[in-house]
Image (cartoon, rainbow, N blue to C red; front, top):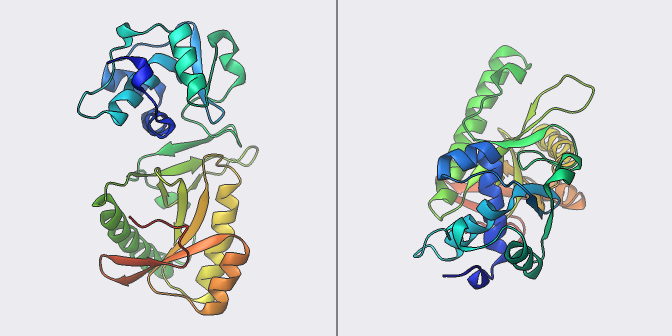
Length: 256
């Protein structure tokens, strides 16, 4: 068991996603790590405690072995060599203040991943009856989709966004951490809902640098011209074929 065995950049990114989910301090407290004192790892432009990151990534690549003890490798040369080999960087900790923390997105000072359970009920400002009905339908759709995907080993969170200078709080619906896909759920496949969802997901995506695909999550397949509209903005569509079964408009949306 040595650090040179770690060959998966994907394992490092999955470890980084777990640190993002919990925050650097929360991650250390949960898994028993200590804070990096001299260097931090840079993964996709974000700073992470370097030895805990690699230790945890090792356990992801080799679940039968578990995390690699941080005492078994140095935080300088060996860590730098491993990160460089996998396409990442190690930088002095005194330069960390110029970098975004692991809990935050690069594109805005205040955008971070949060658990699915976080609520944004106060942000809904639609007519009372319509809002309640739409929210219940959307939440039921989200729950069904998450259950469908979690059963296949996927992990979901969401993003909480505070656009600079507005005082607003935005909360996305769901984010697939493995495929880095951001989903916006709507209560129907109607033109008004699809157009609303398109505007929302394009707005959210401006603030999230860790997003590689966008998709609307709908209770049924929309009309072909609405699919074409979404595709023209590089937004895919996922819809519920029947309870617990979903289909996608494009192969780039991986449903497991």
